[in-house]
Amino acid sequence: MIAPTAGSLTGYAGNVKMFAPNVGSIIGMKLVGQTHLEEAVRCRPDCADALRAWESEIRHRTWKTAAALTPFFRGVDPSRLPVATFRLGSPALRIETLIDMRTGVVLVTNVSAVVQ
Image 1 (cartoon, helix red, strand yellow):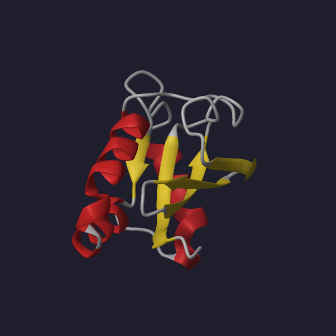
Image 2 (cartoon, helix red, strand yellow; image 1 turned 90 degrees about the vertical axis):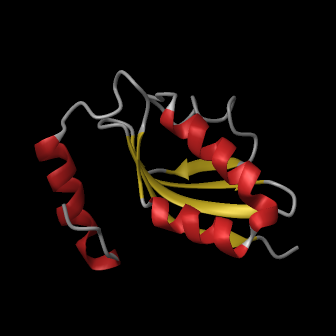
Image 3 (cartoon, rainbow, N blue to C red; image 1 turned 45 degrees about the vertical axis):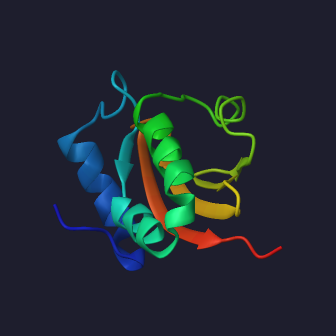
């Protein structure tokens, strides 16, 4: 499967549905875009534990609604789904994602430091 680019997200999402219609429904959410997380760990090793904990939580849980995210992630903003932004760690990081609750896919689009 070809990794998505900003211009190919719609086509990519269609491929996910075609090949795996029930992804994430039993074992947790399907996490796509791990390269953003890996790069953040390389650039910010002080945030590695927080990023790995977030990744584990995403992979081992399934959410069906935006409201279901908030008890697990205090710093999540799911108000613009499919776009959801997670704030975590100290120093603070912002993880930007696209979430398809129906298919259980979380696409990480960016990880950045929060300027305070």
